[in-house]
Length: 71
Image: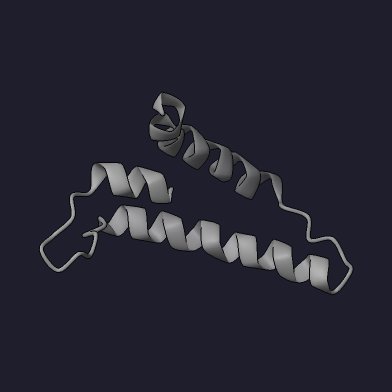
């Protein structure tokens, strides 16, 4: 997702990437899910991802992988 943002959202003079609200929300979702999974590994229990979340993650992957595939 970060590579997608770097490619699709142009840099401003200040150097920040102006992400869209949709992208920010989806990035926050993926980051939160990743933290849950990493935390579950630290505490030696497995956090299972519900099917609804897995389907959503797969949809996000298909949307944002386009830049990665072309490199």
